[in-house]
Image (tube, rainbow, N blue to C red):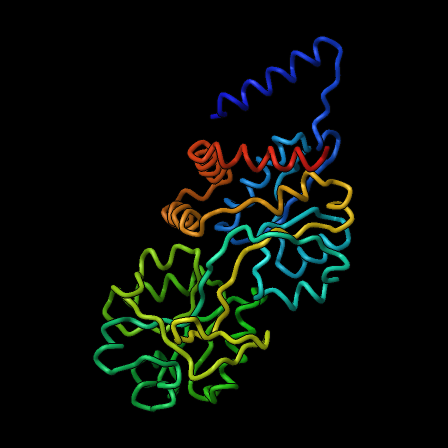
Length: 329
């Protein structure tokens, strides 16, 4: 549902066109191709960007799903226009390998406050005083999470190609846990579903996850599970992951940023400004992700989620579009 102000603007534009006067939208005649990973939970934020681009007159093509690294390459080469899910700083290596600031336009932080880390079930944590990933150096602790009898704890880890797998692998070496923890990988949706089932059966669980995502709506930190700290900062990005409160979970607090082809952004100042000013609350993304988890995962349903969010935040949406349109003048 459009705001009255937006409806009046569209009506005014239409009347001018009928009268023989041109009021060209800044995106008129320009096509846009968005990409995101095959993770369905990344579609919502991309659709909202596309809707704002449509309001500016851009010809928005259907979203394409590609792996992260392929997406950055496509954007750098001009085969795609933008992605709304540049995980910063997690994807720094992929960003730099594909061309970095010479190839990409990136300004602003679209979704902020995305946490990541290791968690275990609260019951086992309290019974055995487990607070740190370094506790898995103890054989008796590893045995609690050993699912196949090989003497190692089993970690539900990160899917290959996402970037988080590199951090976990780095940690296993840095904390001398390589021969103490199995980093189990595969389809994350499948292995985390199995982890949840084991939790429901009363078994100890050790897993990696991130926010915004639906997992923490089912395995609630502080109620069902607890975050584990790490002994010290050891991140492939050479960043200090210690938080202001002194806790250290081993991962940077990430944001999702919009990354676009640099030449395209320079030729389209309205879109560039839009990408800079858009800001989506992380909790709103998590709430939508839970809808996807509950079966509302078709493109049409995700489109409806985005439209509902826009309708509920119409003034914010209109302000983004107004700022973008002003940048074109």
